[in-house]
Image (spheres, one colour):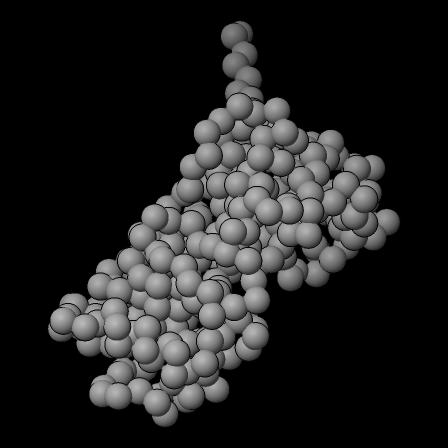
Length: 286
């Protein structure tokens, strides 16, 4: 009797670890796209912030939140046991880790997997743009010849999309030191809107209450406040805005990669290193 045995080939799994805030995620996205290109047939499993998973779904096949308890175990001597227990990690043989080669995580994983470390510490990039610097370090770590490209994040139309034309101002940032005085922000908005018929929308994040209140106090005319919890919807708002005004922030980096036109104000941080990607945002230092 002829016997047929069906076998299922298990896809190679590559773990990718990357930490950081929204701006770091977006600036590292060209390097993450390179990993996808490097092993197109492999299962790319990310251990990243939720923002990376939400904005770049096509660059990975599986995802674990970087804040999960199982991820904390990777920094200890229990890394091997954690990988063996985790169903989504069990088939992993390699890892790409955006950390220094001397980091605790790299040392622990090196005893279990073949690790390619990409030193993504900003202090090491000198005067280069951070995104291109991390991408180049990734090229070297993977031995993958490629061209620098910026992946477009996933967008989603809001349930109640606003009527156009509208312009967005985001007066907040991750640090108060990065925020320009409210009067200066207002003047930038006023100059940009001269001769236009935009209606202004003030974007308010979780920690932007104080900055929004200060701008509201000196605003001449009408401005509507907007809160958006979903990053894909936020990207849609930015992509369809007639103009954008913001600071060195994750929101500005998102505005850059979705093609927004506008002005970004830089304070203590160096725009040579940290300016948003994209061709339509002007940068000024205050």
